[in-house]
Length: 260
Image (cartoon, rainbow, N blue to C red; front, side, top):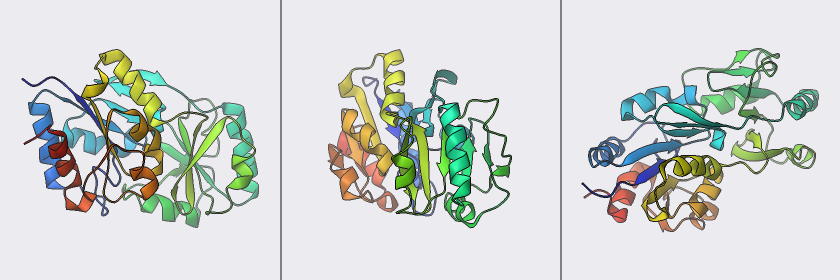
């Protein structure tokens, strides 16, 4: 058996192609990694409930969710980093006054603070989840929330970024941004997994394509940016593989020598 490595994959634009489908080549590549005894993990901005079917299809039980705020190793929760509650209340109140709705994400569900909004419809629909947020303006109370989606068009986010020091804002859609704890990232969540496993840097790999992958790609020893990534993302990775629609995952794993 080869020395065991761990490979972290982003979902959207990395494992899933631009139509939100899982390429057969990626599915087979993940199966080969697992057959060779490697650990395959997911590192995503999505909350766990948003990709349960994908985890089952790929038989993956280690994952970094909500951009690093909810981490599971072999089916067990090992790290939780919820949003600052008081500041989330204040952000929600301000955003509502600006007609910028929010969607709260727990590990189990997502709820909007407004019954319906065109920005939410546009942003969530792009993920092709087959579900939309429910409506519960009180969902932020009485539970831990690991990420919030702030639906604010490009160019209008400055008022929030400058004001809320306990949050980082990461754009993922023209009308939506992830709100996560300050200084948090997928890299932080990955570090929690590595601390538990004790695998050396040379046996750590990561694949990603988006702005929320910057820390991960600049931290993980063997990092691969997808060919569809923007230049800023590619500049943080050690390697660049092909476009996700052109068997990018498989190509990158061959580049790494992890599959034949």
